[in-house]
Length: 228
Image (cartoon, rainbow, N blue to C red; front, side):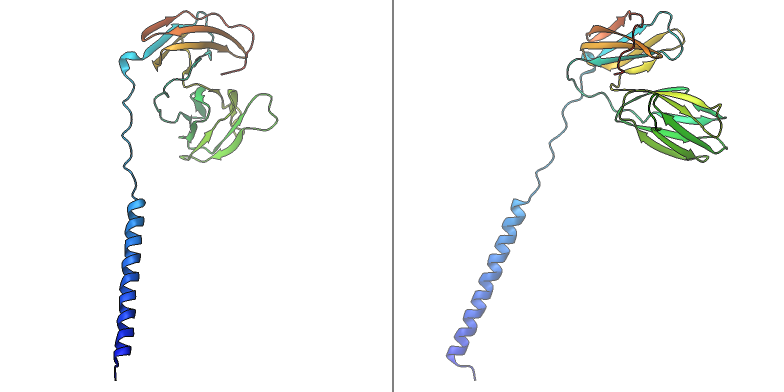
């Protein structure tokens, strides 16, 4: 038999249970409201192409393998993203024979040959190679260089296969063409150090870059400096 006391106790228990459920539900709702993620802010506007610069010139008497690099003296907007540079192995040769890359960005190594090769990369003066990996036909891998300067590339299986890699601390670095010409686009205006590397010798000069076309007459190379 249910007495008034039993019914009252049951009513109290039901009332407490409803209150607890309501309280928990309120906490869950409050937590869900607090954890709401703010929408991402829209990206800033892209650089105005009318304010960017082109830097070009010609190194008189440039030898094959001459490198030109410009390094900004002030902070500026990051350069546009580019695809990873590639060094391929084609018909028992490394292509290109000289590859210019930026430190801190991945470089892709690929084999389009039907022969088994290896890629042995070493910086002159270092006791151990940067890396030494076998590359079966059709295989690719990536490596990121941290230290700037020239690196020799060779295949130990086929000693006649050699190449060079130049690692710069700037995205604005390139090898000159057969006429000694070079060209950089999408450069932010400002003051830059222009460096020319010919083998182990180099020469620096300061240049001021303005929006639009900038035609530079580089100085000749001189005593060796630290690569950019």
